[in-house]
Image 1 (cartoon, one colour):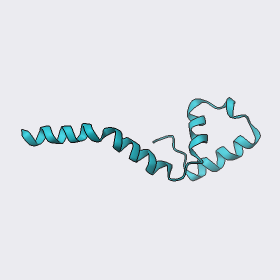
Image 2: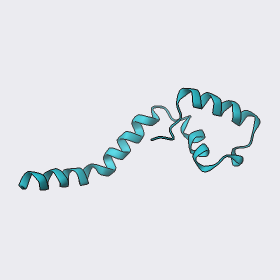
Image 3: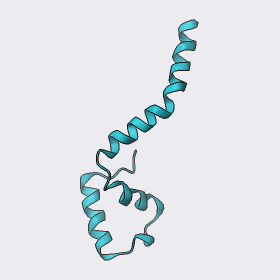
Image 4: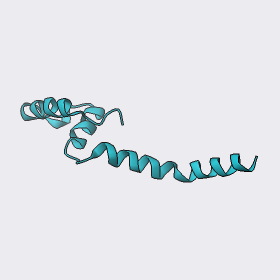
Length: 67
């Protein structure tokens, strides 16, 4: 979530990519470059995280309700 670019970061990264090669970027910069074109990226990542943690959260709630 921390590497989803802000509007300002997207703009700066776009300018950088115009004059430099994508392959010269480090892994987190490549991720940011890819994510800058995804609409509602933060909301989508939050939904994926919630989906991944859902069953664990339900199990934890169920166990604590039985105590």
